[in-house]
Amino acid sequence: MELHQEITTLAAQLGAILTDKRLWITTAESCTGGGVSFALTNTPGSSHYIDRAFVTYSNQSKQDLLKVSETTLAQFGAVSEQTVREMAKGAIAASGADIAVSISGIAGPGGASKDKPVGLVWFTVQIYDEQWAFYRVFSGDRTQVRMQAIVLSIKKIIEKIK
Image: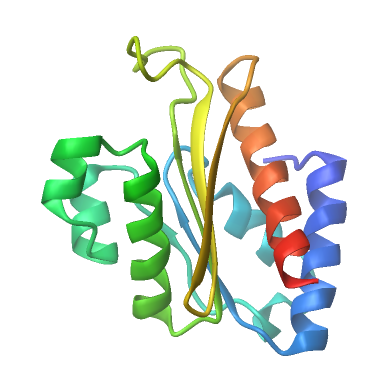
């Protein structure tokens, strides 16, 4: 996997901040398939701020590894504010990290519905007990949606910890 230069630059910037502040981060990724954790661990020295990450592509894995409620998934779906909030909370609980980012979306080309178009991605950044959930609808093909989601998630983490 060749990383987009912007992702490499942002991951290095985030790594420097995490190292300086002595913070640990974890990721809980669905549609990005571990892209954020790959970017973070591609930076030399990443063992100083990342211990583990979670790729929870299926609903079952979200429940098993991150303790996302079956009720939440049934009521709101995997691509929802409620689910990414629970994913972030579960990732911190399972890892002991200070910071988590969770990502769940519809990268396409299939999987869309009237209410959830291709390109819809939900995110949560959690630092200790405080959470910020947000979403974007990205344009482009599957790879472009995923790359844009990785970029935005790293930018938001940097913004929240600065």
